[in-house]
Amino acid sequence: MDQTITIAASDINEARQKARAQMPPGHIILTEALLETGEPGEVQGLALTEEEAAARALEQVPDGSRLLERRVLEPAVPRSEVVQAHSEEQARLAVRRRLSRGELLTGLTLQAEPEKGLLGVGRKPASYEAAIVRQARVAVSYIGPSLYAVTLGPQRQYKLVRHWGGYGQRVEELGGPAGIAVDWRGNVYVTDNGRYMGKEGALNRPYCRVVKYAPDGRWLAMWGERGEGEDQLLEANGIAIDARGNVWVADGGGGKVVEFDARMRWVRTLGRKGSGEGEFSGGTLHVALAPGGAVYVSDRLAHRVLRFTREGEFVNQWGESGQGEGQFERPEGIAVDSQGQVYVADGGNDRICKFTADGTFIAQWGGRGGMGLSPQDMPDGSLAVPKGICFDRADCLYVVSAGIPVSKFTAEGRFLARWDTYRPTPRSMTNPLDVAVDAAGRVYVLEASRKLVERCE
Image 1 (spheres, helix red, strand yellow):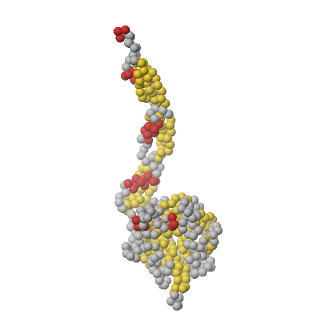
Image 2: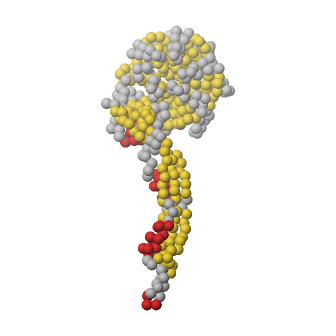
Image 3: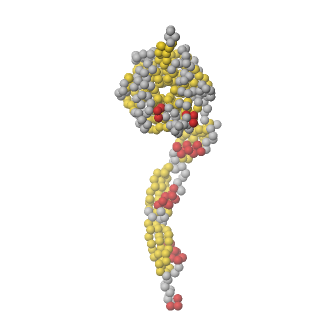
């Protein structure tokens, strides 16, 4: 059962840490929301040194606050004073009566013994030197703790409920599946490249097509003609479906992206093969569509991402070969969240990279989690050659990668879950290529080795 708790924390990261400390085994953070923003405040500390004064001020700061500034209002100032008294106790009392506000007596030293007169009469008082310090005063300003509502719940367990496709020559079977997408009705689209068997019994007739299935795996349609025309395909890779039901196919072999309408009629072609701006290398391409209509394409061989308008006008591009921020090594899948931020599966660097709509780097996460680890032994949140990626309606990111068939993250990169889509048999999934999620939250994984579409719920 889901449980919502209220947590006082300085920011959302601290709230998550506190929530995890209370989390039952097998649970994850489902949602998080800011309830109340903390109020600003200031406290002061008084002590012999600035460090001690700051420490005393910090003791008064409410737990979960965010510290802003530490200011020295009054530095520590030492001075000395000589007093006359018949005893040390009288000297201390005399000094304390004359202390100003914030001053403190720190020591008393006998300077001159008392002088005695004849027969002890007329004795003069002794002299004492008093060490006095005006204490340091330090102010600490802060923003009080914010309140967050964090909902905890059991980690969802996905199970394989059905699969279809498989290698073969029939219309519902697949030869070389490459990309997968779903439309708003839950229909599944798969790009497929292969060879038909000719009359002489040899696989000598190449094809390039899109196959459409119902959510339950029933074959509905297929289209696509292999060739170099603007409405033809040479090697179909990534695929995306827009809100109108139009189908966008990334043709890596042809160096272009082709848009078809819902009735499988050609609409337009974006880009061309080449090495200049707005051109594609001729290697594997993946395509993603932004809520505002922008079209993003990852180019594996060129190690970059290209951005176009919906009408096909080139806008900008970013990326180059490397391991740094904004660099890629053989980028694979690409996806856009509901806010228009762009995510790239950086396959050669075992990570996901996140960018603004114009390509400004935001964050990255993933990695194998340790040298020499097999995929099965890698810690949660690790990735090994991530390939296909997609978002669900809650802006959760799904990633398929080698040895870790499906991983699930928040849009900020926080790990949520990982699972396999098969029973532990020798025919286990070894090469997941792409992933798609429908409006009902059903997950579809495209598996290359067995040429299957696997549906998980």
